[in-house]
Image (cartoon, rainbow, N blue to C red; front, side, top):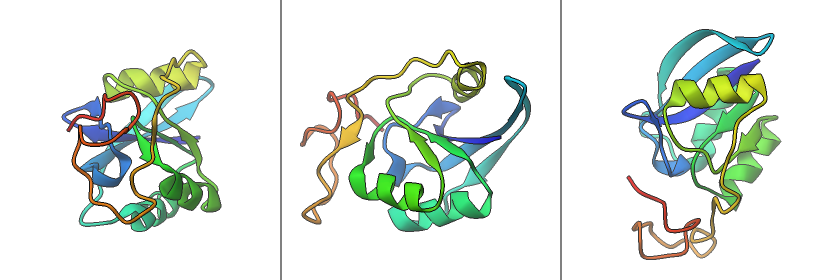
Length: 131
């Protein structure tokens, strides 16, 4: 199984659409067996789903994410786990082991009217949307 985690400075990046990259882990039998960093480049939300699909990612773990991005990832066959934080490797290891704990308030609802994103100016999750 391939697990991608939004990544900035080895921490779970809290906004999927603005992530600088992804830590991509391969897991087998509940353990991480390989990892690499994948740059997000200048990709937008929809293009990020394609980047992950081309990498054959099975699961995306992130902090906050909007409904449009969830739809794009789901359409690409990628399961979305939001509400995570902490060190990306520890998060991937916990997911692989079945012990990952996440916040339930991870949806960003500010993109449905084409609004720009300024953290702290909207109801992104529980206000924990920090860059």
